[in-house]
Length: 137
Image 1: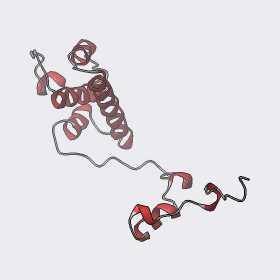
Image 2: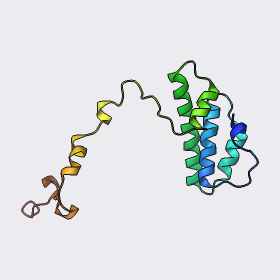
Image 3: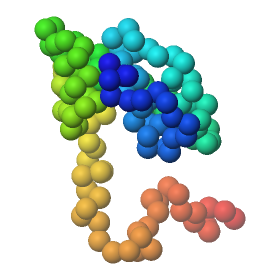
Image 4: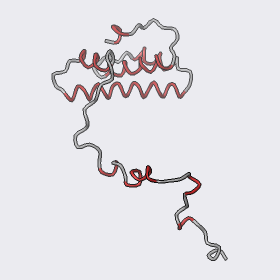
């Protein structure tokens, strides 16, 4: 799959190309075609540890999304998943069953943030953070 879309004859990659290739390698690795040498070469070509981290994250995300799409439909062929994730526009992935736990949902405080008026200098600290001179005698 990977060789049909990307050439392995490169001498230099910019960050975006490296991340795109790492993502595609992650998708391919989900179907037993890891191309470890290519992946390691892409990571080695990265200019900084930040770039290597982006490459690793892109690889992990590609693998994860490929496995999610495969699990969502039992009759999906690896080539179809490759086509949807690598060769086409962004794909809406299925939502996990049950959604987010209530603890991770929006909070009332975040919902109120748009209702605060004035510049940050007009906001006051909560009373328990303010020192009273009477208490510090």
